[in-house]
Figure: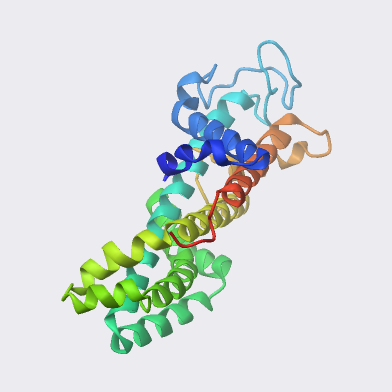
Length: 275
């Protein structure tokens, strides 16, 4: 997906290029940030809590005297990594089920669609809270929760696209040639869904970032000593009155990540057209 977007970078408007720059920046932080952190993530390196900017601590210190920049560089890996993995899993699962429904006929389509309608009716926060309360918080469970929560939304969009495309003349020609359902789904229908699905993937990613950050803010997400961006906001909430960088920095990080993805997806050329 990234390669596809980079190949179209020259055609992006200014807002899209800004979004691409923000997305690439946070991807680089997620990949290389922990290696560039000036201090160990959990080390107590400052004498004062909620210390301001200094040459030793570029983003100050947190509520325990730890370096905010180091924790931010480490926390971004959990936020970006978990959200990207969950969004890919949700999109891949939803699209696969949608293609199955589109080429499988009413006997397949109806049960799948009704099951997805049932899942999408469950509020995502309530669903997440119930599962975390039942099984405890862990990275695999958070990944699974986020993916399951957003499969139905992707399925509905992908199914609408796939059902319309399955009626096109070139698909009917493929059926007349004797092509099987798998070939029709993968070779004829799926390639013409890429642009809308890229836009949907971006939306799923943003929703999952906000879901995971919300869970972490409630203390149900990534658990100490690890922390994602939402956890950094929660644990430094007492510094809000002081305007501490320890709470402002992760909040700005979440905002720039989500805004960047939205700007990039909105700027993709032909994102709403079929190839």
